[in-house]
Length: 338
Image (cartoon, rainbow, N blue to C red; front, side):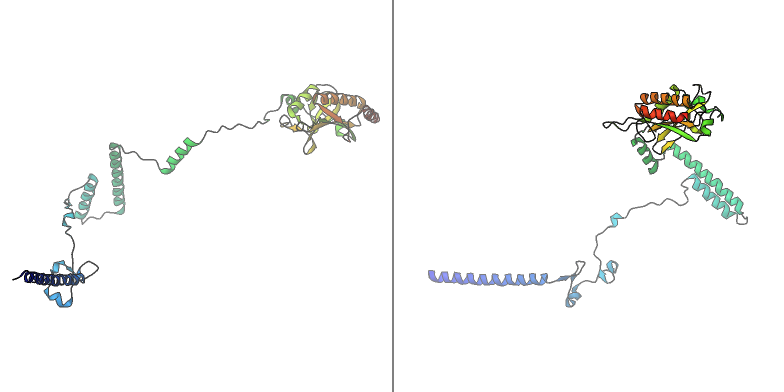
């Protein structure tokens, strides 16, 4: 055998072996494809063709449900072992009492229990239960928790600041200047000129107004101080009056009213001290038995009050009073005297 023949034989053998290898591999691939072609149901169980089902062993009836094979893990170890207590054992003294009472009632089949006795027995059992619960709670140091509303209220109280309120000042008591006036009776003869007046001589006293200052007013307390200083008395028609004598005796000379935002008005003795006034008006009622003396007294006191209040005296036309106008008024008053 030559070398060439040997080589050819070796090549032929290699080709035969390669062919066998290819045949075997294709056979394995076909089996694998057939195995991959098996279908599975929704539970993962393979669906076996009808012609091959006779080779499958029949499933155990204990493991089948509705004709399907049940495949599930063993969970028997999860079943807890529960040892039941005998039903005849009493769990509490109350249960024992109730059980005994039931036996007594069942045994006494011939006796009849009326509603009153049964209700009384229930009340006694309820009181017994309550007392036992209280004793157990005290023994276990049970503390009732406050409800949500109480907790919220306590928290809110701790967060709320303490607000101090100040009482608004009020003129509750009469002014010492007015105390001596309010209890005095009105003498109609003494106040005759005011009661029977036919004409008046009016003088207005208004505070000076300055452009660079707030609107000036007369404080009630300042006005009361001047009233006491110049001897005016609170009396008839809720006005202040100046009489012949400073102590309020003698004939009425002139009267005074206040000027507020509402106009000219009498005084309220309970609010004079706390009010502010835009001005005051003094007036002489005519006819008057002592008209000239009353006029001179009114003008003198009006000048002094205006000076004390930093005010100006005005006539009925709201013009400043001049000496000429004062003399004109005096002549008018003389005609009413007597």
